[in-house]
Structures are given as structure tokens and as C-alpha cells.
Amino acid sequence: MKTYRIDFRNSAVESVLQQRDFIQVFDDTFDILWTSQFNALKLFANLDSEAHNPSKLINHFPESRQLTITELLNQNLRVYNSKEEGLSIFYYLPKDYDVVMKEMRGPMLARPIGHSSGPQKILSNLEEMKQFKKEQKDKQYIVQGIGQKPYYINNQRVQLFLNVVVPSFSPLVAYRYYDGYCKCGDDTISFSNLLLYLEARTSTKDVQMNINRVILHTLKAVQPAIPYVRQCFEVFEFSFELLQDLRVKLISINADINLSMDSSENVEESVEFAERLMRLLIERDDKKWLVVIDERGGRKWQEYL
Figure 1: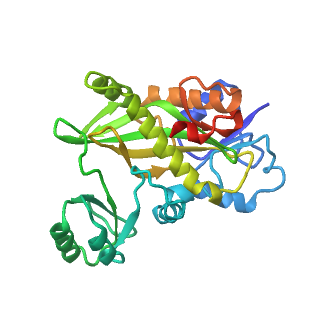
Figure 2: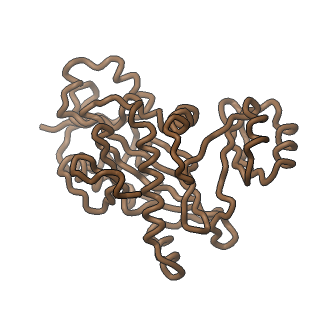
Figure 3: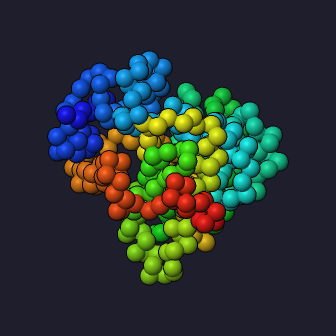
């Protein structure tokens, strides 16, 4: 009898596991755990020897926050020191204001953090940055460089949201799901439809390679900080901005993917993704997945540069 424990309500993962005859449990006797990053951290601090059984699957690594907490990701990127243009170094306002004024070379995106609230804001030049400091002097923001030449559809910037599964950080193994979604202003389209749109105008091979390259370098940057835990895997949602030359710029990474079925609009997509995820993890069926890197199979990361 296979068992699962899940801490999200109405998740597609639960639906898929029930179809596979998994039985729900509420303790550490699970075979598969699907929980939040915060709950996983508490769990790792209290796991007994049974829960450390390598046959189990847990949907977070102990230090996956190295990617999802901006300040930690920033530290890893600085140490990694890649020249990959799609990787953004982040700055903190007001603390790093003087550094930003020296290093600002183009538009920057400001996002409120901590207890601050408000919309994101694009700052195009030094004068706008000075004015922003005066207006927001009591608030904390993260700012990062964005593409000086963003790709526009209907006069709207294009933001990509793509899921990446990492079954192992040592050796590094990562797969990107074949589809995702994109935001163009208030409109949402699938990533596959975006590729069809681009194919009518140019080759999309470069888009795919550029995305994989940024994902790869990001994972390589944090790899030394992630301890080896055999039973863990991680589902990350990478967010990018699409640029005119079909490169992408990393914006953020999220690891709390609940695959909710609360909205009728995304039930089918959530269930399909959950099913493909279980096939990948349990049966090693990688159909619908693009290999970003697989050091186990001899496909080294240099091949993707």
C-alpha cells in the first residue's frame, strides 16, 4: 500500500495520487509528501529515522530557499560570478541606493518587500530613481536590471512562467515542463501558443536554449549550498522577462506550487502537470519534459552553452 500526505486543499496532486490508489495519511508514514516550503523546513528539523527512508519522496530540499529567497539567491549569484546576461543581481533600497546610482545602466524593476506594499514600478533612468527614493524613503524595495529592449505584444511586456523539476542537485538533474504560461499585461496565454506566435516571425530554437541556459546557470550557482538528500525533489516556477533578441531575464523563482483546482480555468492543466510529474518521479517517464541537464546520464551542462 502506497501512502501520501498533502498539506494543500483541493490540489491536483492529491487527485492524481488517489487515481493511483495511494492512501492518505497524516503522519510521517507517507511515501510521498506534498507540502509548503515552510512546513518542509519544520519537518526536516523533526524527522525520525523512518521519515528519512530514501524510498520516500518529499517535494522540497532542506535548502531550496537558496533559490526562492532573493537575498540568498543574490549571494549565490555573486559567488558564482557568471557572465550570463539573463541572471540578475538584485539590490536593496534604500540600503544599496548609492551602489545602484553608480551601476544603473538601463531600466530597473522595483518590487516592495518585507512589510512594504504597493505595485511594482519600472524606473527608466537616474532621475526617476532619485524621485523614487524621495517618494518611498520609508519603504523597502528590491530592484534589478531588466531588459533594455523588452519584447512587446500589443504594447505589453511579456513575462514567462515555466516549471522546472529538480530530482537531484548532486548530481544535478533538471527537467523543464514543455508548457507554461505567459503574461502580456492583463492577458494570459500558454507558452506553447507564444512559441507559435514567435515561429511565424523567427526561429524559436534560440528562445528554448536561452531559457535553459539561464535555468542551468541559476541551478549551478546554488548547487554548492544544497545538501544531498536522496528522497527530495523540487518543483520550481521560474519567472522571466522576454527580450527583443529572444534572450530572457530572470525575475524570480517560486517553490510553493500547490496546483490548486479551485479555478475551473486551470483544472485540466493542473491535473495534466501533476500526472506528468508523477510519471517522471515514479516511473522515470520524461515525455513532455525537456532535459535542462542530467549529469547522471553523461549529458554535462557544457553541452547546453
